[in-house]
Length: 203
Ligand code: ZN
Image (cartoon, rainbow, N blue to C red; front, side, top):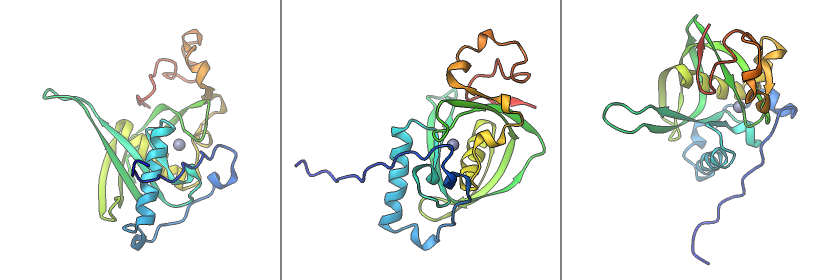
């Protein structure tokens, strides 16, 4: 034996069609956050995000119907150096306010394998919640980060991106998206054909 700690096995992903994914999850008792049991849950959720190659993951996606998620924020490189990524844990998060402006983006989800959706959401959000140490945090997000927060928050409410599609034609196969050069300009909606994954397009 090499003395390393044995990690708990990774739960499998819960996917579109499982009725539990379509129900609101339960709030977390803040007293539980510092416990080894809950800290291990955060670690396991993070390992699942890496293993399943997400940029965010919510607890219900691995079968824990509790209100927490992890999001990866990518800060682009500035003039002084390389970009950085920031891992943010949200426990019992709330959306405090949204701006009236909306934007569009292609969304994917570990729980919706094989599909992408052209989804409209508020362009910016003010949010609050607890971090991984149980401390209160309030932040504002715009751009792709606002998109990721809202997507992950939706999981805690039992909402998946296909349910948010304003038109069923806005949900496409990932493989088809890779062939979109052959689509008509305005298919499946104006602006969608040319929008790269990870980019938001104004309303
Ligand atoms: Zn998702």
